[in-house]
Length: 227
Image (cartoon, rainbow, N blue to C red; front, side, top):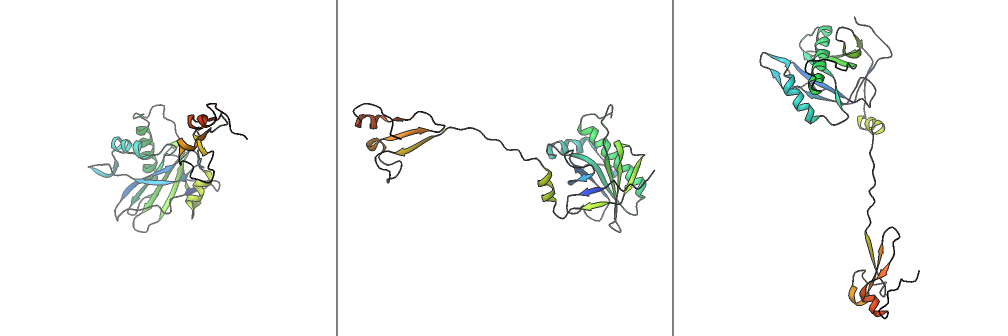
């Protein structure tokens, strides 16, 4: 079942996986298809559980929350379960199963039919020792997974995201008129507009015409200023 593979690694971008309180719990692991496989960008604590079992998620409520909280481009890629003296292999299976079910609920595929199986992370933490072990499942198969010992915690996660993220830049062409004085270049640009006249220079190299006040001073004829 388990097999060590030197080529498989888990990257953790959140500074440290947060184990909230001194009690068992579950956290959803968040990643992105734009990052390398098994890269954990953040975690969300599971806050909706069944009354009969504090470690059994209420998938309907959890999926409703995560549809709102998850930014576009991010998704659930696994789960971390915290237990006292856990059976790591067994709990890893539960973590992978839980993340598969939540993904189906988020996508609206509650029955799990024709679901897209992705590589997932199942993490298990021992509440007594704080030890965290990671397991990865290919194509979401919780019965076939491997333990991963190569875990990289990034000291500068912001830099990692900045270098690999996508920055969207757009430019909107906006034309605005530019006003400049004709007879008083040293004066305030908007002073005595009607008395001195101004030249309207549309941005984009459009035609320029004198205002009526300036036209009157030029004998009623509109002229372009000398270049």
